Length: 161
Image 1 (cartoon, rainbow, N blue to C red):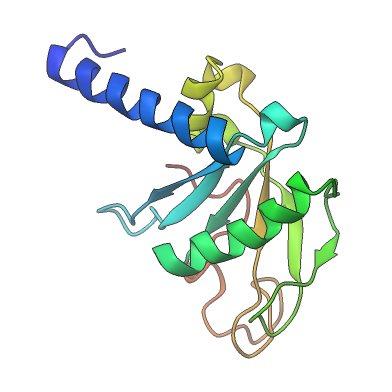
Image 2: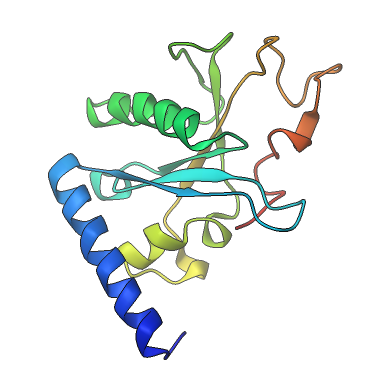
């Protein structure tokens, strides 16, 4: 835990902004750009769906616009009453195939803002589903011949923030 006053002030402002967005929109998207290391993908996740009784949603390996678009479409389904189930294919606009819902086995290593929002330590993290998206050729990371496998989109549990 940081004790740096400048960092604490910044986190307080971020937390207040996040609370306002969640209060007004029911959920928000936290986007994290790629890290300096090759094993640190760009990813985004929801904050707020846990408060509606549903796991948060995570998308890895996309830029900010596609991440927000995909998460936004699926989160809207959830807020309209749809409860997603691991293994379920979900059709989304603009994708060559359905998005696959998978359990994120290490949410405490990924959902930092969501856990801070709900005041939960990593070992008691809010749960999450990773949405695995099809490549533009329609293949998934587990398919033989997928153009880039985990380099495009890491498998759930094989990466962290």
